[in-house]
Length: 76
View 1 (tube, rainbow, N blue to C red):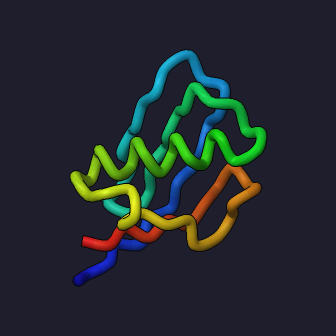
View 2 (cartoon, rainbow, N blue to C red):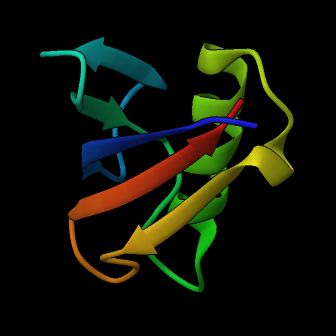
């Protein structure tokens, strides 16, 4: 199983859920959920799992759980 390490700038409370690829390692992700009680992080993981076509258990926040810029690991 290989892993891909990416940097994500999360934008909670957005009008729509959207992922924008900046480079191979940098993404911007807009999520409708608020940054309260981990809701935005849960939706972020769901969206990234769909984007990379993996299960949600294969996406993990490595660093920055409470920050807007996060380090994410995607296991393939």
